[in-house]
Length: 189
Image 1: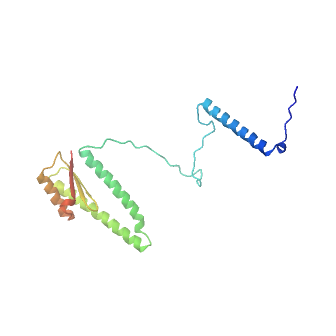
Image 2: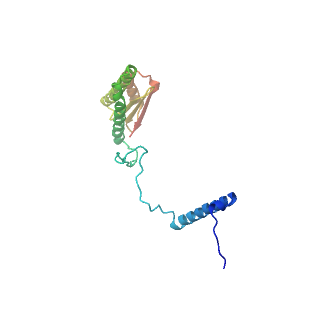
Image 3: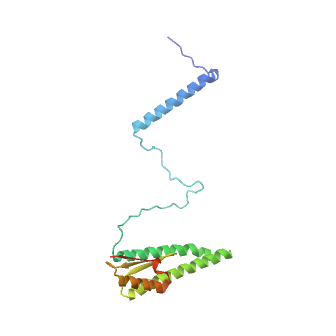
């Protein structure tokens, strides 16, 4: 019978210590890999905990995420209703961002914000004037969008003839003084 004696860690040479540690790490790696393969990479059985930002407190407000279902682009009259709703939402968002700056203590910031608010107000007013004037002239529905360098008008119609295009251009010219080459006209039905 053979008796096996174990050495103390201090009695091993540096080379033996490195070899022994490498062997232990290799054994752990093999055991871990086999464990993952046999368990089918199932999630850990440890209890889960919601992750929080680094400096957050557990009683902090939790952000609720929801999904948005995309719909097919609306056709016909629905397009104009949805366009106006989205336009109103983006206008309100712009106003909400500008509103706190109107009360700024910095005069330059306050003056710039007032100018942007005034520009937004004029843009809204001109778009509404164009749309109302087009309805008065007999066009069933239309939306106007004033950009920095152009005006886009979308009309509810199966097609547009040259007289209707000239009428739309004249209305836009009357309200905006924008040259004809910067007026984009399209139709949807």
